[in-house]
Image (cartoon, rainbow, N blue to C red; front, side, top):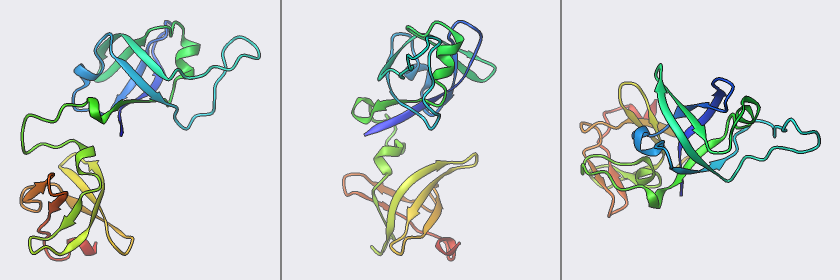
Amino acid sequence: MQLVVGRIGKPHGVRGEVTVEVRTDEPEARFAPGTVLRTEPGATPPPTTDEPGVPFRVPAELTIEEARFHQGRVLIAFDGILDRNTAEALRGTLLVVDSADVAPPDDPEEFHDHQLVGLAVVTPAGERLGEVARIDHAPSSDLLVLRRPEGRTALIPFVRAIVPEVDLAGGRVIVDPPAGLLDL
């Protein structure tokens, strides 16, 4: 499974550096110089190079030459991206890593999103409520997005009072929702 760790934004300067929207808890490790990241083109139309008739193709992998934090953003220089036009052509590209390459968290109470997606969601009594569709990271707490059997979705705050247990081995998340939470 491919995990998105960042999305390339606009160029910064004229030497090929780009801004990156961080989508990982460990930006220092993921964006260290020498790291090779796979790419998935974003929704932008295919750009072209300055050379007439030669379309620019986003490389399947990009190697980080230099990364630095500047005003709350990560600025990255990739190997072979030497000018602003080429950097602009990367805009919208997703940077991904394979989930097999991601070490599990040291804390047993911490989970990566990909570990939770697809798990069955049940009550303490064993009633099936649905499955985890994705995790939304909100400012106050993370939210489990529950796909209900009838096709609706529900948001469940990922806090111990409501989610007392995550059983990865058993493939389930135990949820004790307050009355009305799943009806919103």
